[in-house]
Length: 134
Image 1 (spheres, helix red, strand yellow):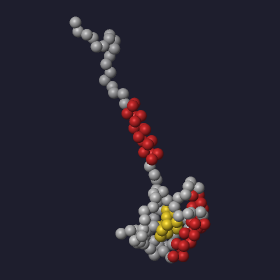
Image 2: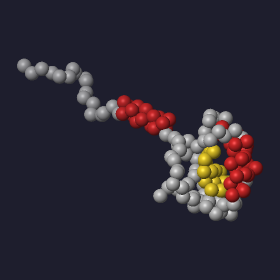
Image 3: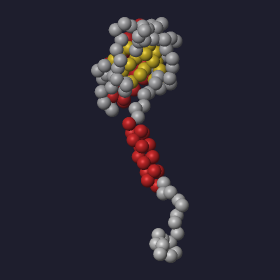
Image 4: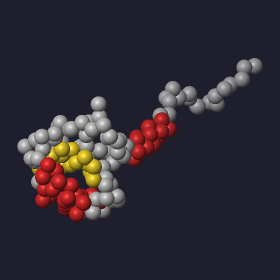
């Protein structure tokens, strides 16, 4: 006599349960969102001067650019030298973050010094100048 694998009225389902797969995908998505670091770029391209003694800084930093036409840029908008101090004060409230000034090679030195002074007055412990190392 043959054994019956299924009882009367019970049908075999041909569907695959994908809810555990969806759970795993959502967990991976949340993991990548939480662990991703976002870098605020200045929004302009500057020609940085070259330096032999350049060092790599940590990834999270306040990036301020000074263009060749003497505009002080943060996040793609012109903040001027007067906007550096409130910006740095606000961003330093999150923690001790270094300030990196990306100045074009042809920038007036007095403007560069003004931007560095404003950042230091705002409480920045580490103010650096971005260079290219070749």
